[in-house]
Image (cartoon, rainbow, N blue to C red; front, top):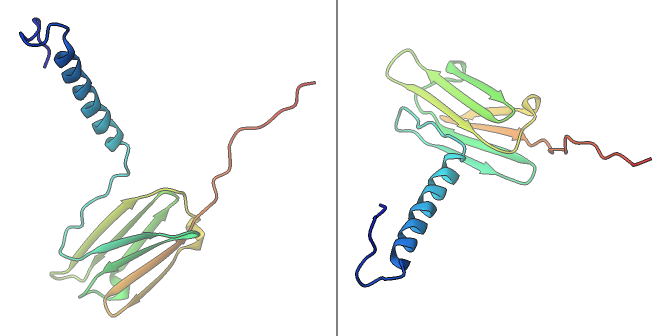
Length: 135
């Protein structure tokens, strides 16, 4: 909050300067947090865990009450979505964005005792620029 006049006990305006700095830091924090990947909240009581390991990313999702045939998985280089519906009361809808990129062809999934495990291999990001020599 900006003030047109200085506080009585602050003739140099230090308090106002600190207030402005705090406002700027709060704005910077909000901008920085806006860059974080967006994670959709599941529309049920189950859980989805995400483990970023050295060479792969592993998702584990509790999905009781559905069968393997009810599950639809879609993988893209930086996101995953999982949906399932058993035609009754059980509906699951997960989506997650992540970094780094993954090889979509490497995706493997297993479903056992109501738990879905999905493993995605990471892809090494290579610089897209080119180094040139001066002649």
